[in-house]
Length: 320
Image (cartoon, rainbow, N blue to C red; front, side, top):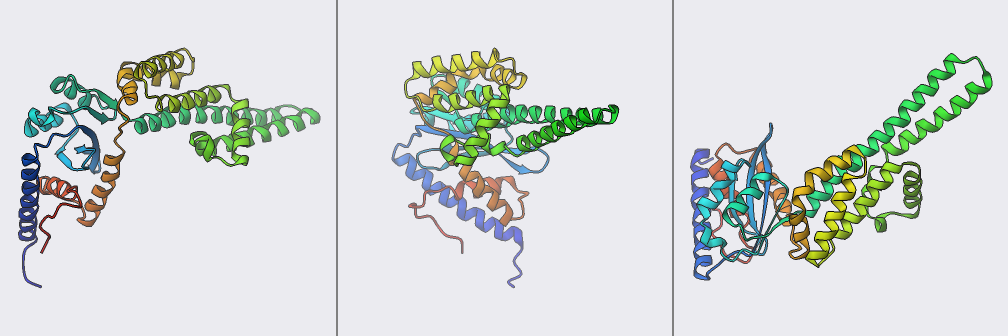
């Protein structure tokens, strides 16, 4: 209607957002602001495994920094642009087990405890261990059902054929039940109704490996509730050792991967923080991407992300 080019509108919006962010950061400097608890996480910006990284102050929910990529070289820009003096009062930082985040915080803030996010840990265990073992057990039932079906064709004994058909039908039923039991195995006990609890007990009583993995899942949940660091450290050490000695390939692999992360897992007892707030803000980022149908100008996009993380009680300039 006004014959104004899109790039002009973008420049106007960028100017307003830069002004608001600069004013807010000036207020922070005047108050001698130093974040105490941070969260770091990556989010997808394009299809094809292209990512960006955000760093959030967990107390104010303000995005201190957003940048392209998630490698060590990419994330190092955070420390160079923000200045280490701002991190002088940092008590702990929550993150997933991305090696880039871990190594760089150990390099630039060696005395700051790293707390590995419990939800990433539990989600990965549910996917890589519980899910893998459940599907493996289900596949065994399917193969047994197919083998019994073939046996009915090979034998001429009507009685044996009948028994084989019945057994094959039972194996198919067990296969179907296991395929549909994903959420029953992942849910907390107090979130299951009586029918689901009975079904869960039936599954665990018939599948040893699943029962072991389920017990490990329950113990993991308990360990994340501990508030004594030494007790948590001893608990996680025993948990990792039990996983390594279980003889279940998926569980052994998972335990081996987490063996070097025990201190970061036990640190949750001292600092019960996680990346949940940042994960929630990532949903807002997805909405911003959808509204704009994606962004080519990454500088504008990261400024937009930080602008939308400004505290609600902060009076910032509005868009015209």
